[in-house]
Image (tube, rainbow, N blue to C red; front, side, top):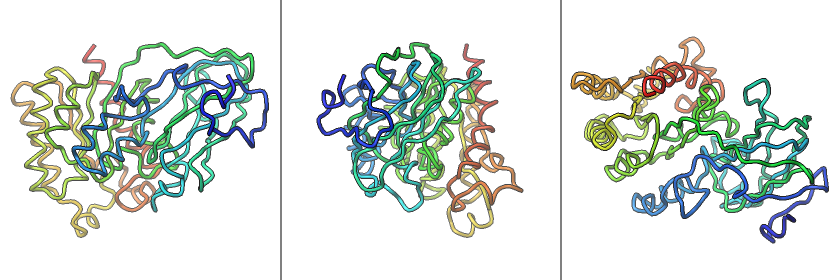
Length: 357
């Protein structure tokens, strides 16, 4: 297929090869989306709009959205039209590739390994790039979508005559609900968010409902997330609660509401990562009572016979001696911080999923 047959406004200029055959997203396995009416939206836009204009915009950000497929093409191109220009979507704390770029992994020795990134030009609302994969093996490819922008149209370019098959394997799936940290701020690129890292470390699928600044534990969101079929729920909305009183008023109720609809789904409760607890306490962003509220919700569930709950203290996520190297701004993780975040979650995630078998 020619690219203009997919969308007449998509670009294919500046590519290193001129023999691409172009494919639509419908020919690929699309992961990380919950809105059937809008295939590259993470979750229901109508629900998001009812929670505010900012939530509506965040629902269109493609954090956690991926395409997976098998091919033997030695080089791969993408052409995409973004919801906003890369300049408009770029937040002060984010890299352009984090907010509006894509990264590509291919299977090597049984695991996914980074090949490279598709960079936005920093000005327009299009991304058009290609990558040399230096392999013509028939192999699995995964492309991670932007974390803080949306994608309206996506096209994949493969060398003419190359094989293309969807990834049809059924993998266990976890669901994330949390703050801008969950959404992926401030990794250098999409594949380094902790959800993406944890997915690769555990060979699982995932859905990222990280809502930067807007993860507030509303009852409507609890009902909606309980409707999602998932093998594990990771509850990570400590950071966005305005204070301990608010957290106490919503967190236990949110858990109970979700658990009522999903009595057997394993739930991991996370308190916020602490890089410098003295600074966070002085700034008013953290107090020990917040951690106590989450821990007590977990302990109360255990006391009532719930054997599918887990608690991770955010203070244990990052090695204390490396804390300054793991944060962008004392609140958000950088790539190193996200690695330790995912590494700490890995054994608990595997234990929860294996117990559910």
